[in-house]
Amino acid sequence: MTQQDPRSVLSVPFMTAWDGEAAPRLEMRWSRGVLRLSDEEPGDRDEYGVLWARHTDAPGAGRPAFGRVHSGRQRTAMAALDCQVCGNTAQRTPSGRWTWLVELAESADVVRYSRSWTTTSYPPVCTPCLELAVERCPVLRKGFAVLSVGKVTPYGVRGIRFTRTWRGVRPRSGAARHIPYDDPRIGSVLATQAVVRLDEVTLTDWAHSAHGAAEHPHVPHERTAR
Image 1: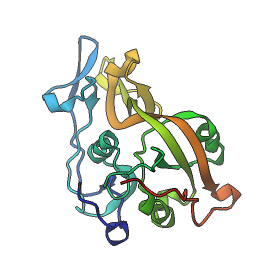
Image 2: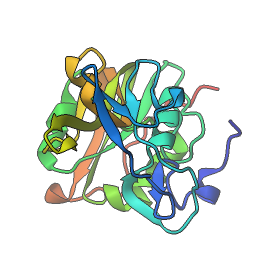
Image 3: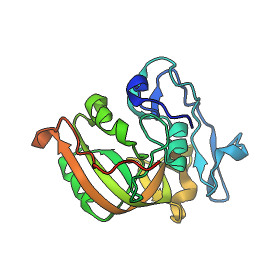
């Protein structure tokens, strides 16, 4: 992918949905214990056999829907480990580590990022975009965490679980969760975002409005590898 200057192109993050992009209504059915689409095509499932939501791809159509993720672009960025902001390659440092920028909805959420491993549906971020995103992204105004990551592996998906009822196939109540590929419930899921597992994680910085928001994140001084 051609590299771009984030400061010249960043008004809307790469994986942000636009209100002119449509998520078509899907007619779903239950067959052999698995959620299916009535007009399902081979491209509706990933290499793990998981069913994915459909979403038209028209960035720039209408207004940006900050906080809402475009499932197709998120999936593309995660598969290639591209930057969630500019969509270019999120290059690793000379020591082989990636940088991750994640939202902190609650200050207590920092605990999960203080462990040596975690899961996330956020793609990585490139160094030029890190500070820029914290300055401009409205979703991060409440809080954010910056992670240095040594190892990244596919984990599963974030999505909506469905169940069969007397009225037909209906979504289960509750928030979307990170569901691993080896979970037997994966056949009942309509995926909306790809999830990876991060190992060898170091929390390098975090801020939350409850503790006084930081204006600039700490950026490791190690130069990006080419």
